Length: 148
Image 1: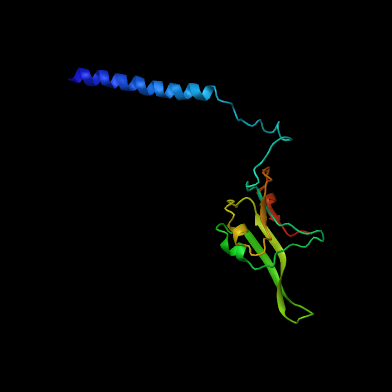
Image 2: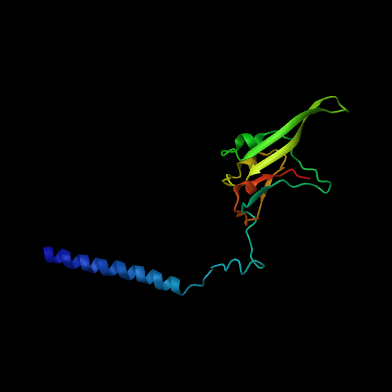
């Protein structure tokens, strides 16, 4: 009885080995998709869905769409975004209005979850496809996005 289980164990071991070898041989003959970065930097295609770095697009006059509502800052799980705003009085209407003074973004602590982009009611921020963000000093990862 023990002899049968011993032989069945050997047959099972050999069959699983052959299944693994079949997978290995099949992958050996498939086309390779390895990117030769940085040699192929000129022809490198990045998916438009890639989340590289948070940016604040502006129009031709240098104005951005941010109204300093603070939703992105409140919803950021890592406190990556810090908004400084001030309240001014509009001369035409006499109403008080929030104005963005400084929009700071810490790229080093961002986990690229895109919650900030999704909650922005004015589409004032978005992720671009820039991915080469390595630096030797972490202080260079603290970015001010609303520079003019």
